[in-house]
Length: 154
Image (cartoon, rainbow, N blue to C red; front, side, top):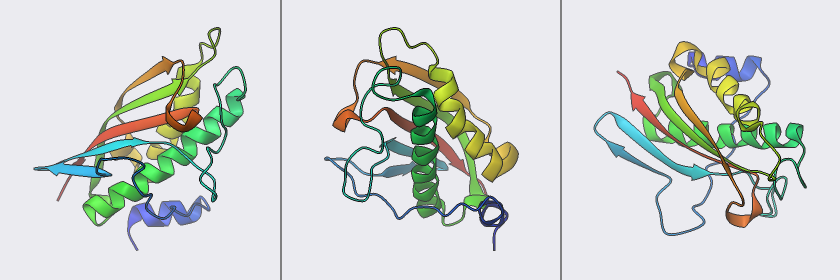
């Protein structure tokens, strides 16, 4: 069992099944030792957004953080597929989009849930550069979408 899988187990976390693309794109694309993961959001078992709406309006800060955390799990599942083993993954850059009410300014607090997950699972290889961007809406009325670039290490 890899170090990352042991960390997931100790945290009581199970990675979700790989998502199916909801459009004309790939879940990820490798270019040399880099992996570019397409934007992901989180959905319920019946395909609805986990928390539909905008953070600061229909979605609370804590719900937004939970959506970011669950989105991070989806990204980790995709990275595991791309690398074969999460111990080979080093996250380089994360871009997070937070559907936000006009008077909501805590986008970084929402995305911290995802960033903290990556550090908790991958240690120093989970630390990354990041942007947390407010947007009026996101596809499917999701509150959070995130994409990333990672490096596969030998």
